[in-house]
Length: 476
Image 1: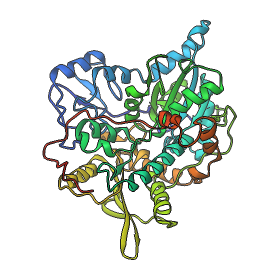
Image 2: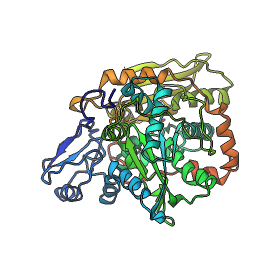
Image 3: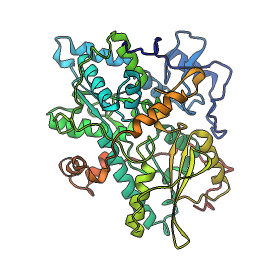
Image 4: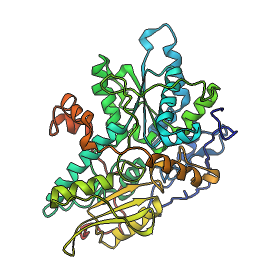
């Protein structure tokens, strides 16, 4: 069985942007970053794209992910760095490692997001744990030294988000920015919040880093020291379902200017990795299985697990259950969602004696984000927490692995991936001894300065809030 199971090369659909301004299909009608002819020409000259780049110089081919690329929000410097995150860069590192000049050798580490593994399971026609071992075996066969999954990093992100929510809730009466708290794991949402919504929203964004960036911090800090390496000796690749993760990796706060290295050097989508496998002209049967590696330098054969909730790490469910117990002494066994507009806009409420104690929302896709913003215009949002993701359906629907013809999600593929993902056993972050060990061995405890440095970040305002959205009279 060849890896290109579909019988055709894996391609990513693109959207043409020429001199005529085109709106992204996810246009929120809020973005005031208009693309100038000069900006378009600059991108054409640099050959920058968040997806694939066409050879034509008259029309720039840009994969429109959310509203990032189409409205000029990507700076020239960012564009240059994003353009380097491709298979050519990975192959360049692999080629240098084969040469005799050891001064240019890099230890190559790959971290795979759990939302990418169902994609490979379907393509390999096997279950997720078996597919993870096949993927690991292939990566090591081409020269990768270590392969991790990012579940442990997601556990840190969830736990820190839980702690921050409880802290915000307890100070909500004297801090107008405490509530609601918006989740911070989706770079498409973060980009929109920073560039368009500005100070209206950014103070409300949870400061916990995304799983990707916590993994980057762990690899370049803890694991590097474990292996007696410096961060600049490591080339760290993340395999993710989403193109927006490339943009997250180049944020300036994740760059070490002294060592000139990033926490995540390169993000490749699931589809790009599949393309690499197809280029190698191997079959699944020819690939030896290998267990994933362990951040303590051991080999991990404990199997692949997931977190509770839908296929995007379940931040809402974890925070909801933790807050119910911590704030009100209520053990929530099962969360019941109330669908509002569609399955990508849902609410969850905690009630006692007719009183609503907590009210959370899951808002996926920019059309539903528009609805949320529309409610903000009216000055009232009833939620204490909103889990926001730019991809309809969540991370499993990321355009780096689930895009079908015409740029629309491949619904049958997404449904299959959801079934594969939900079949994985659940492991609570609080019950993970590896996480607790890392809090002590890596971070010097739960409340240390190291925790703030490695697990948290801050978000900036790159735009004034639109004048028609009220701010001072906002009621959350």
